[in-house]
Length: 228
Image (cartoon, rainbow, N blue to C red; front, side):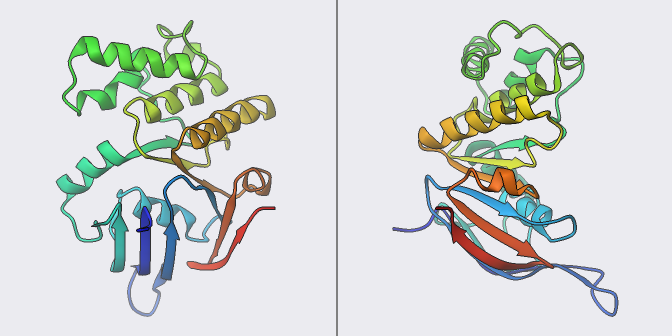
């Protein structure tokens, strides 16, 4: 069976020449549909660069990237945008919510780019917020929500369009321990429902809760193991 994600000999080099930085240095990785995986590394390890590649937010200098059987390494910005909109739900450490929109409006936003009508958008966004336990906070703006609630809005936004891949960049990095447990439980439920969930993290406690751990250091994958 073709893997959902196949990366082969991927390089990303900044400042080519004498002072070059190999953010990704000959990286190869396969991720199957339905996996629950953490990509783990310290600051400067290359994990954020790798996340940008996996999320089609950036393109490699060389190497292959096949997503769901399609070669995406050399697509145009518009083509990459279309893939992001249909294939990947993003959850960021900083929430990335629009301050002047309420929770419902924030979750609706990516659905606009899918061309959905207003009523349909509201229904889908409302369902997504209910799934993360915020059915009573839909009309609240980000500054009226706790950090954990803001991250749940971000999760709802990521899952509203039901993308097959959830890509979470340090999703618990700005949260207290209670909110961290809540967000991890939501991600586990998403995995159980059939989504492929990829978490980018530096935190071994988070990595211990997934099925597979890929460790990256100095732009290279140094280990790939299954959690017992």
